[in-house]
Image (cartoon, rainbow, N blue to C red; front, side):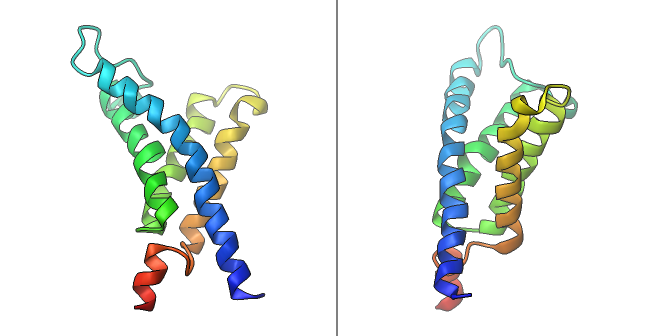
Length: 133
């Protein structure tokens, strides 16, 4: 297969899901800023007893910061791991007992990010440019 086509595919696999994921991460970031230090505290899913504050911070990192790194292709494989993991938690823990229709988007994101973690960012990424130079 033409490597330019492979690189174009990797670019699409990185950029499109990451850009859409950031639309989920941005409201959570705003929520974190709004609720941080309030009398009621942060209200969010408490993953593994970490507390809602830490869980929300980790989710913001996975849904906003990691996708931003994926879009530019910086530390691509490493950035894809928390994004994939968070979507696995969303699908199998948060929505574990829900019907497939309620968790299918999280599953799709998880597979996309897992594929990027396995394949890397390709030549059309900061990682690819740094490797080349």
